[in-house]
Amino acid sequence: MSNARHHILQRLKAPARPSGTFPERDFLSRHDWSAAERLQRFTERMQAVRAEVHHSGPEGWLDLLARLCRDKGLNNLLLSPRTRWGQAIHAQAERFPALQAYERPIEDWKQAMFQGIDASLTGTLGGIAETGSLILWPDAEEPRQMSLVPPVHFAVLEAGQIYTTFAEAMVEQDWAAKGMPTNALLISGPSKSADIAQVLAYGVHGPKALVVIVV
Image (cartoon, rainbow, N blue to C red; front, side, top):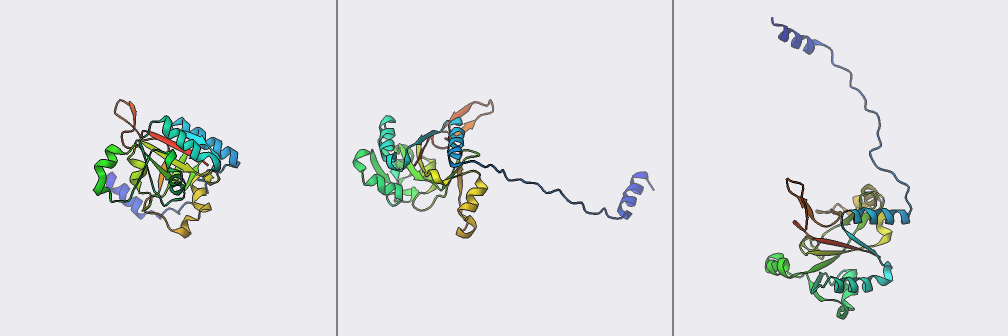
């Protein structure tokens, strides 16, 4: 019998090793950040990846949005007229560029959307301070294309919905009871991609500009 075969048979006959135990580990980040610290960290991390973050408060966000639309020379703005934010904008429509509604299947106006829409505005489910990310749940009112296709994406974020971590957001908003969405998005800055030479380009696979309005 060869030595190799002998060693294999000896190992097979040997008693099984007792199963070991793994030490408990805390895999979740835990930070005791105040609301002000969460807002500051979220802002810093977003700005580090070339996102715009504006703090307006609940009273001044419409004024801020109107000014940003003028400054960016936008000709139109895609939004849902049935969401909370969309209704507020429609109530003062004369202050904004031409308002467009996402009311048809994408197949019916794909070319117009990809070539004719300057910007879109959506709400958000919250923000994550640890990573500088927005949480979006696309639905029938605000489909995924609204935050993916237009060159400029305005995202409205309530300051009270900035959480320390993603896990905290899921617990605080009780995702388990609500039911998990078919498509939950974490957005950290405008679209970016790099080639093999590590040349970074923005807007290749999505918006060139992400503008977060914190209310």
